[in-house]
Image (tube, rainbow, N blue to C red):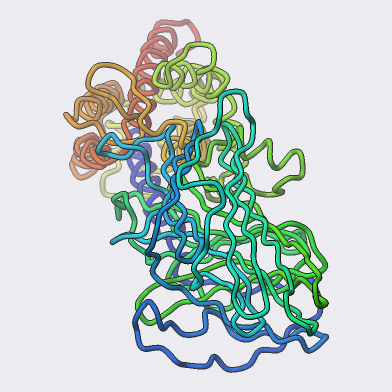
Length: 559
């Protein structure tokens, strides 16, 4: 088979693998194998009570009632729309709103990241798109929860003072025989918000309340999702026993993850951003998830206070990571054991081990040159240099095959009625000239994983989001708005095609001719950063192929 035709077939195979890979990436979002095991003895489950009216203020139980080994029943957690006076909080990185009605975090804007309209990126909000962070007490009748009305201590507007590292916002509510003091602790230059629930038993009898921390989301995203370039949206959970797992938004509430653990975290992740509860270590923690008739999903953690005697006070707490998936921050939290496994929310798929190395190298280059586009170009040079020995084998094979094209064509004409004899004659010619007809295939196949891994680095790294390159390219994570890079990339593929031997078979020749058109159309929807890599790689390949072909056909070694 002609080597150029094999390369075209490999290209088609690569495209097929890539499309199947994309679908495979989506598959876990719609089906979970349920293979995770709890980190303690199995929990019994009872049927879900149904009391839903389909309205926000009358939702069903968010998760199945769980009974642990001590027969302690976990109570309901519900969601209610937040209204009432709003407390505004300002830090270097965050702009947050806390509602006095419920004491929930109903709005959070990230000052380091902009939305498509140029405003601060809204990670949490309570409107058409709903993602809010709620907390309170359950397990005791009339306990203060996110239905209750709170009174803020110290005013309605809080700004982190110059020179201060912490800012605390305290709210208090009294309901029944329990008083709850909520403390939101914000830090300078940080996405972490500490939340402490301090419960006071003002009654005469001992009670055993639970604290809960949950994220509620209605499934509406504030960024467009491409069906061609899918990214994960749903729940993520991590425990030391079961490690990292993802659950699609549609499958939240399907009880496919550990319910009981003394460590770990749970939250909602989406492209580039995450809202994750990191509960403080305690004797027991219960992870819960739920869905409702009106499409609201919830994930969170429930932590017991234990017995609370008359007049006694106890505190349970959790930290909320609400921010961008910036890998230096996530890795730092992982390395100091503050949030083990949190870096895994950056989803690079099954080639993570390659993608992580590529991102580290890309970051190292960017720190030096100060431009992600230039860093991609230099990374392409490095990758090309790394694969140079393999590429040389491929291009020398192509050059020698091109040199032998007239003799191969003669053999095909001579034995056109005897395919077996034709193949034997061609193989004899290859042995005589010491040419491996498949020599050009392996180097290309070995580069495909690198290409796919780099695709996920460029698509999945928030560091490249809205990163400018030159002139019209103001966001390397988005497609080229004027299609200049895809057209140049297609032109480079066409030039490569012209430098390769033309197959004598008309069908094969036609496939090779349409390949540049096919991939050009496909690349119109790729992130411009990836097309930039593809373009530079093609240009370097052309230069390398020209040099090797010239030296091979002009050298004395080709007889």
